[in-house]
Amino acid sequence: MEQWITSVMSDYGYIGIFFLIMLENIFPPIPSEVILTVGGFMTTTTTMTIPGVIAVSTAGSVMGAIVLYGIGLLLDVERLEKIVDKYGHLLKVKQADIHRADSWFDRFGIWTVFFGRLIPLVRSLISIPAGMSNMKFWLFLLFTTAGTLLWNTVLVLVGEAVGDNREHILEQLEIYSNVVYVLIILTVIAAVWYYFKKIRTRTN
Image (tube, rainbow, N blue to C red; front, side, top):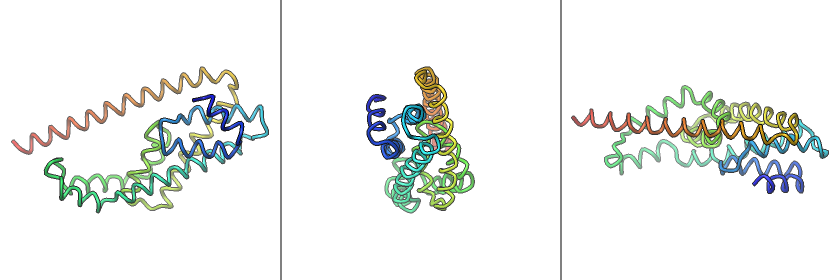
């Protein structure tokens, strides 16, 4: 994967970085950590600059986030309500549950988007609920760009600083990512357990 990423960036420069980062946002398994640290390192061996790499990677990331935000708009609350009306009795979900979740995102969504951009996997997927909740586009764009800019800047600077020794940094980032994935899985399990416990209490 890293060799392919390096090849694309070597052949296409800034356009390659933009393309790779945009894909990374739409298809999370592509590692932004590798793209950004390699991009940072390549500023020491090519004519690319730190500001240039940060700018195009942020633009590509935001473009990918906008695509997922658009998907979220297609899956808005009204569509979910229709699904719940049809299948809610099977899923044990009511319209009130959707409204509560939507209300929560309306209150805290902008900060969820900002901090979500700093968490592997979540950083891509957070754009979908933002669209579903009909978050104002300019707010989504502002906080997505801010969180993305912070994430990209740190990793590009790290790549530029460590150079050929970035393997150790990538190992540390992989550990961080794995810990986050485990926490996400545990959170989902806990949420499902709580939800079904609530259903059993309601039916007793």
